[in-house]
Amino acid sequence: MKAKLNKVLRSAVNILGLLALVSAFVYPESLLAVYFAALVLGFAWYRSTSNFTAFIAPRMMGVGAVVGNIWMIQPDRYAYFASALAFAGTLAIGNYIKRGLAFDYLATYNLEVHRSLFRRLTAPKVATKATNALGTTLVLVAFIPDGWAQLGVDIVMLAGTATVLGVIGLRVLDSIVKRRNDAHVVDADVMEAVERLQPRFIFHFAGMPGSQYHINMWLPFFDEVPDPYLIVVRDAHLLEGTAEITDTPIVYAPRQAVLEQLLPETVRACFYSNHAVKNAHLIRNGDCIHVQLMHGDSDKAISRSALALMYDQVYVAGQAGVDRYHQHGVDIPNYKFRIIGRPQLHEIEIGERFRATGERPVVLYTPTWAGMNSTVDYSSLSQAEDIVDSLLRRDVDIMFRTHPYTGSNAAYGRIRDNIQRKLADDAAQTGKNHRYGAAAETDLTLAECINLADVAVSDVSGTASDWLYSAKPFAMTDPQGFEDEYEIEFPISRASYLLRHDLSNLEEVLDELLDTDSKKPQRERIRSHYLSDIKPEELISSFVDTVRSTYATPVVKDATAANAGI
Image (cartoon, rainbow, N blue to C red; front, side):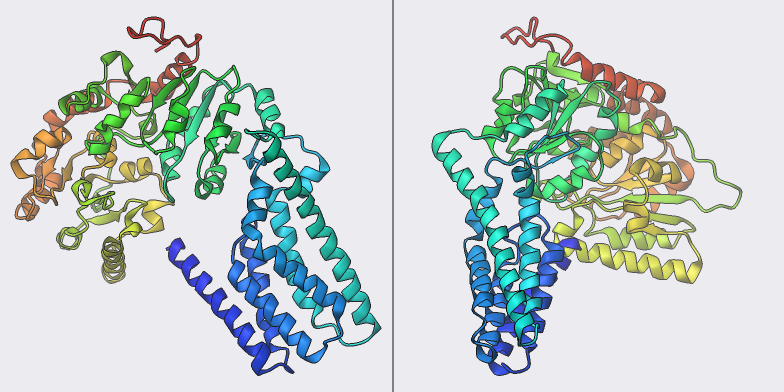
């Protein structure tokens, strides 16, 4: 939804820029072009607080429209035109300026960095805001009526433009000189701050837009570790979202060359929560223990990917996580595995949810996303309307929680929206307490959803494993039609009631979930295999102890893993 809104806004700003240009020549006496340009540059100032090159095309059109408009009615405003041309020229080479400002400047959060006044004034965010403010002011000055006041304002505007752009130019020139004289320029101020922090380990985070949940699920538990650590974010689109959820020091490292500088001697371990391509940039460093956490425990192919062979340690929730790799030919030595349970499950209540007499059961339905390709598309959203319709015919409340990536597939996004409307209509007609959208996906954590629900319907995903910890009954879907091979491919399903590919046993499965529950004894055995026997109150402390063990001793790696610190 946010991506669609941004696309609409970009289109709207481009249209305003075109309207400004057209108005400048069609209605030169009306200053209509200046009004449109003011909207364009004002919006750019509001929206682009850190990206110097954001909205370059409409901003160029807006400035061009103002210059053309003013030239036709007040051609003797030379100081004003000089300011406008300087500003337009700056936009024209915006990509070079953006690179120059950021070349030896690393964005940070929650890290005490000591910078000179010049470095603070020319930080990418400050320079972007100053330039945007300059552009908006340039348009507003166009409204000054003819006379001595206009001349004075134009001269002040020119002086201000020269000052702002001159300081930015000096910063870019300084960057060019450093680049010519040093093959590996780094942000010395940040490096000094990292040295002062003395982090014991690094949490490396890269990935596609929207993947903040990969790191979100781990940060609360890393914050329980009583030693300092550093989060290194590799993709700009993940930076602000990560900063919103933690007080831990963060450094944005866009280039591989920066990584080596962010590893003071105190760092002995690096943690990862996915298999992002950029992980390899850091894994190549042999002086640290590299640990793969993943972002959920499931029987999905990604949870037993051969990419895990790169890491020195692989954290899994239970013995099933170890078996999963070996059963699929991923020959990770046993000494590399650490069984840690799932610290995220420490708040989950085990056993049947208490319901007052006459209270409707709550069914949690958690369809997953489409996956990166069709072979790993385990989503039941293509069948979801049939599943939801059957549930609506029963006296239950539905909690419909979709995957954060669902909207990345337009077809599945439409199905999700249709089901949310259907649930809203049913709630209005029957008074049932259905939860969907934000009420099930952002207002509540997954653990809170599990505690509120009595039974669940899940796809092949980490949600199935997390639900299993509650010991309550659940069903799993088979949208790809594995049929008899399903239990072999996804062993966790032995604890569930399996829906056939064609949903022909849907009513029978719902009866088991809500009434019979014949698999209760079997479910308890499989629960221990998948999620270990670590008690809920010990999950966090056990995780903290395991993390600290990775950097407790100096790192020495050899072929036999002796004295490897792992």
